[in-house]
Image (cartoon, rainbow, N blue to C red; front, side, top):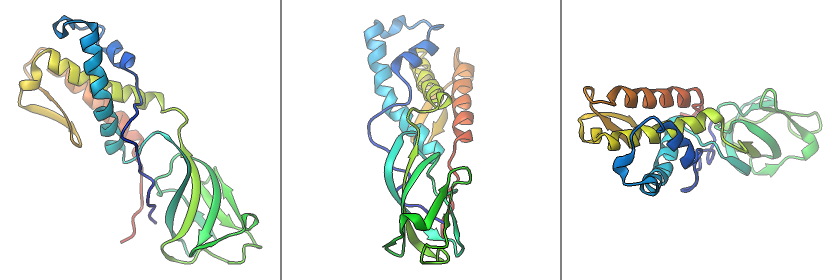
Length: 217
């Protein structure tokens, strides 16, 4: 099973606010930034890269998608599971088409608890014929607001970068990465351990939300 278009994020947006990041820095001396405005400006610069790092590590985004059309491999049975399609959490299915033919709305039923679509006796077909991306489903999915732990994970990534820059540890050779996003630190530095803790905690949280997708081979 494979879904196309399920992982589509915009270039803008953030799961956390600058205030969330700055709150994590309340115990640190930030005077070297030259004032609150300069620190906030740098924090805002980090919101885009850190959100993209979260999306990359999770293999998905945490926005709301309204009437997103995805293509899924036919199951060969009367039940089609959306688990593994990358749409999570699902909210509503509004259209189902098999091999380009839209099925009557009374011919199928979506079961949210199982995240699956079942053909009804009046569907006109007995099963979702096996095939590659031969079933098109219009589904609304995602979050009206991102999960609190994801917002905190993004804030921790940004805070780790700011601590690294504040303490000049960004010049060190050790590095922690999520995709293209990298935070440098020194194991012997004043805040090296704290940077590792923040990034590791963020990674652990994001891993719990990672999308499980099935791909045709």
